[in-house]
Length: 63
Image 1 (cartoon, one colour):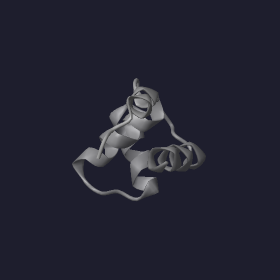
Image 2 (tube, helix red, strand yellow):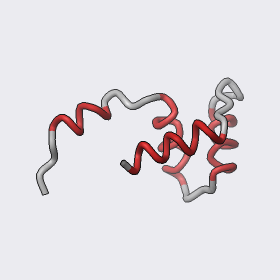
Image 3 (cartoon, one colour):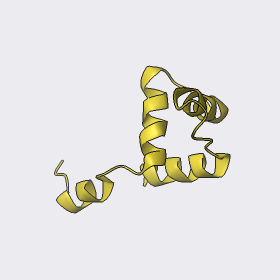
């Protein structure tokens, strides 16, 4: 399967929300609320991701 360079370039650099979601999922599978809680805990509550941002970001990752 060939990877289109334009598709790869569109993902770099990762948007901050996507980066934090992937870090939260690196340790274990989590449901949405657990992802939001993990991001808040890892960032000292500096990032309070909304459910809308989380699910929009996940949708973009799936496309």
